[in-house]
Length: 258
Image (cartoon, rainbow, N blue to C red):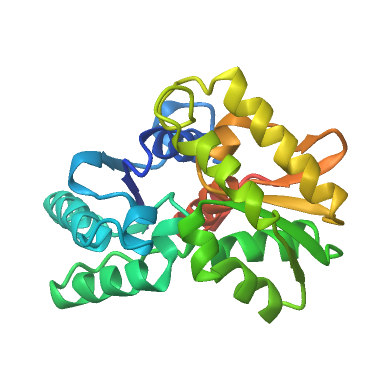
């Protein structure tokens, strides 16, 4: 039986989709030939998908769910044309806030788009349980939108773990590291030194507050902090967790060992 195609709902941000695509390739076992890799449908349609934090904080009334559903409509048409099944994901933490993710799934169901979509945060927790089961106090760096929803707090609590967050007065600095129009991670590629230094400083602050590891809970953050650790602090990359989950669901026999 053929393996499934993988669908990336990209553009949120654009480099996060590229990073996910690369990690899918890096975590796939092959026979050394191009043909051993998965079919990947990577759609990056940023212009049609409003900013997720802007929606959650009320500065933009347009729900990003609608634009992403149009992306998956394109993917469904492509899958149908080649007779393939697929499994999909959206590499954006903030997109998984219930106010966005739940309407997105409802649109797919209503339109008969039968592409199972993995949940980034759930897969991140599964990755932690499998790779680092002893972790109890976990820091999270995330956008203000993700922080406002409390989705990581609730997920960690449900799994018997404690959330360590930045002091409220430092959240604006993290937002700047991501969104600053001159030097933020969304504006400059590769990530600027100023943004990387600020990300590193805030990661260290979480460690000083007792975090045993830090979840890079915005998909721009691993672009600036690409290692597995920083100054002895374990870094959890949700994009890696998602890539491995997509390979597992497409064909578990092709998933490389950690």
